Amino acid sequence: MAGERFPIPVEQIERAILLIRGQKVMLDYNLAELYGVRTKLLNQAVKRNLKRFPGDFMFQLTFQEVRGLRSQTVTLKRGQHIKYRPYAFTEHGILMLSSILSSERAVQVNIEIMRAFVRLRALIASNKDLARRLDELEKKYDSQFKVVFDAIRRLMASPPKPKRIGFQTPSRTQPP
Image (cartoon, helix red, strand yellow):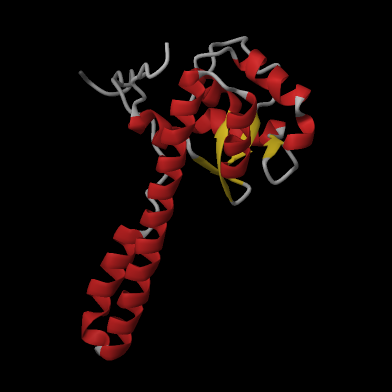
């Protein structure tokens, strides 16, 4: 139906943007979920239009990259293995997807994805501006504020890799 709106959680889009090989990308299975199609169908549409997706628009992850992602995000059940290496789409690749996926949902999802990339660029730019200002302040003031500047830099640094949390049972050697 024309004009129909699909609720697209911005947080879901932002969580799906990853940094792989120094590029901000989204993986095929995340995009397929957002578009409301099966990953296989998304990849088939891409393969039918492969000329539109050069290496700087899309690339396939190596098994090592897949293992690295899996250890950070998802743990498969025992005995499960990834059959296919996912494809990673850069911002330009996602834009190109909009030319081959023409459903109303695909159009709206692409608009939200582009907005998320713009917000991410603005955040990175403001962080660089903040780092530049901090450098200027550090040069202006003497070493008495070094501890403060170091603390601010640690806060600006990327967060540590997520650690697994949850209920832990005490070991058998510890008393209850």
